[in-house]
Amino acid sequence: MPIMEPYRIKVVEPIPITTRAHRERALAAAGYNPFNLAAEDVTIDLLSDSGTGALSAEQQSAGLRGDETYAGARSYYRFRDVVSELTGYPHAFPVHQGRAAERILFTALLKPGQLSVSNTHFDTTRANVEILGGKAVDLPCRAAKDLDDDAPFKGDIDLDALEAVLSGPEDVALVLITITNNGGGGQPVSMANIKAAGELARRHGVPFFLDAARFAENAWLVTQREPGYAGRTPREVAREAFDLADGCVASLKKDAIVHMGGLLAVRDPALAEKCELLLIATEGFRTYGGLAGRDLEMLAQGLLEVTEPAYLRARAESTAYLADLAAQAGVDSVRPTGVHAVYLNAGRLLTHLPPGRFPGFALATELYLAGGIRCAELGSLYLGELDEAGELLKPAPYELVRLAIPRRVYTQSHLEYVAETLAGIAKDPGRVPGYRLTHAPKLLRHFNCRLEPA
Ligand code: F0G
Image (tube, rainbow, N blue to C red; front, side, top):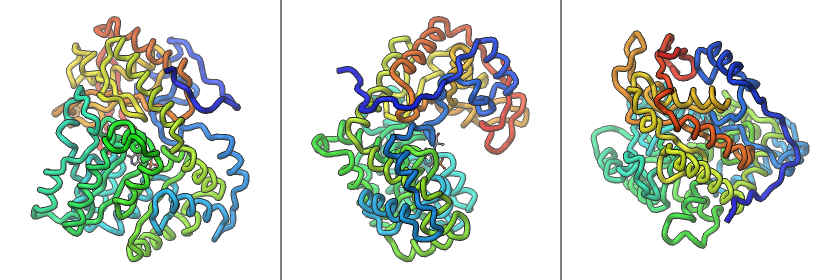
């Protein structure tokens, strides 16, 4: 069956079509760091699926109805009602984006020296734990380590390892399950795993939270892959996941299909009170949390649209289509394909480049030079250990490139263009040069580093 997007295009925006010479100049001026490129130099932007989605006509009109009253705006109540119907959590706070929710929740829950235990913390989540003096422990399941394993739920947390940490000597402040697991190849987490992890946490008296940035995409994959869930709607499955936890943090820039927004929701009234104080002190009053009324309206509408099965099916199929075209061209990606991104296995394609010449980065750079496609490396440049001179001491376990797909933005032809560009590179991968760092800041390296061809 062909991919059938259940929407049509009403407003269009031109995208820059550039020459290779232009891209070579732009990239050299950017110190070869794609984060330094201007949008006008990028043809297809697969850097992130966060805040990059296309609004629906209903979201735009809801935005116009936004109520900008300081306290108690109509738009807040609409947001609260939609969140409460979706999650069942009695205390829901809007925040400006996901990391604000993380900071507030961890400040309220975590004492210095305590652990936050997760399937995989997203990088801002880990940073927020560490800034507060905590330790972020990732316990991905065993199947996650094999990129080619077609196991359906490679986002699961390792339950034996979780039990060992919970029974061990260290003090655990919370267990946090990221759905889907962005840091782990965008793989989904099964309901059975969420349930079992929640039971373990509860047995040890530890709060159990979801990082629900891609809750709808996780729910979709559950309906497709988990026994017993085939007949359920993504919305029912999402609700069941929320029911299993004590609350959630969520970047709503993903599965609420808006440009800005986040959510912190909890059950416990005492925790809610602590969070509310921090919210008011740092984000905004409890009925707007750093967002405008129009944002709250668009969020509420987006949260209704995102669980539509026809939308989720088309999105999952178009991501799988891109992964299949890449595979036909000889470029492997993390299996099985998730929904928000294709994670290309650059290490396997560019075998002539050692990790210290950053094969993931080299492939991402080549996609830009060859086709104006921007994407992010997830390999030794981002995760490896470097010495003072920027040479690699310890490589990352994998050399990946993430092609993150914005929601409702690119058509099948755009994805075919990406695949064709990739196929052109894969014809003669030995020609792709490696890179060396010329500037490697200690913190947030991937945003600010500069490189040159080696
Ligand atoms: N949690 C997950 C799983 C995420 O993927 C992100 C952001 C955040 C939290 C933080 O949310 O950006 O709203 O503050 N991920 C983006 C990405 C940036 O490209 O994957 P935020």
